[in-house]
Length: 160
Length: 274
Image 1: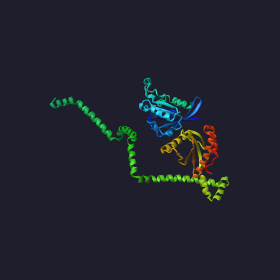
Image 2: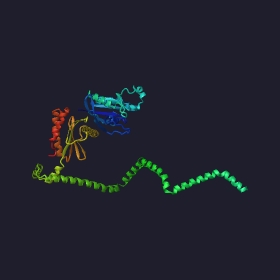
Image 3: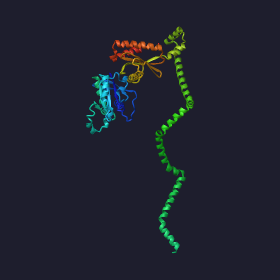
Image 4: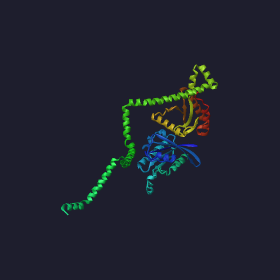
């Protein structure tokens, strides 16, 4: 079975840990606990009859991606960049951050994710479409929407 | 009807309501007095209220009194360190004494068991060793009992922390998570001390020592229990070097199954303590 390292990055409180918990344990908690250093979890995923062992590195939130310890990013097979769609500040530097990752880890795929889609009223989604156009997928760790699909997408990107 | 009787009649006509009212108040006051005098009746009325209040108070204690108590305790401990030590010393002393006694008991049982096997190959070997080296047989027994044992070996890809292969004598927690966390700790230490050219070499954990041996693409993490001397460290490093040469020569890094079989073969036959 092939093993792949995924690193989740993004600002404080965007829901990185919650997304991993939803995917690995199918749980969600409203209690906010700050991640210090790095936390590692794993889950096996079956994609097109291939078993993939996903080793997910949950990094501490930072507004400046260059502050993430480079050693944690080494050997990454795929990045998930998480923004909180209810707080524009968390995606105000998205271009800068993506440029940094693309320059440093050239062949590593990056999936841009907008979390907390549950906070946007359903009728407003169409209105906000252009605003969130830079994101690859909108998810909700709280309600579980698209979380499984998000990990499947990054796995697909890593395998191709 | 005289004037007094007329006046009385007028009074009764005018003040009947007030009198009834005063009488009802008087009855109520009597009842209240009775309730206050008789414990059982008073308790019947007051107990539910006190109970509710107490319950609410108990629920509020952690929030309201918790920080004050913690702060008071901290101040008290800081101001009376000697008294705290004096109070804790007998308890800690007893615990340590009990632990040491238990460990000595286990050790003596193992020594007894070892000495009873008089004709075993191991005993004969030890007797010969004692004769030639001049080291007392009892000392050799104790040394054997604290012998270092290689419990687990992980071959971990540098950077990603992905487990490439492993060998272990007993089942452990999730190997992938251990590999990841070891790599994160290693990366953190090397990053924090800005030692790009130096590597973290070992991590001590309770009675275990995790020895880390870095190579170009991967590192070998070996978990050892017992007394891990410098001689044994050299022996392990030589063995790991040999294992690494074979891994590279046969390009086993990309062949997970073969690497796994190779590691089992290499490390199951390897005796660290002898």
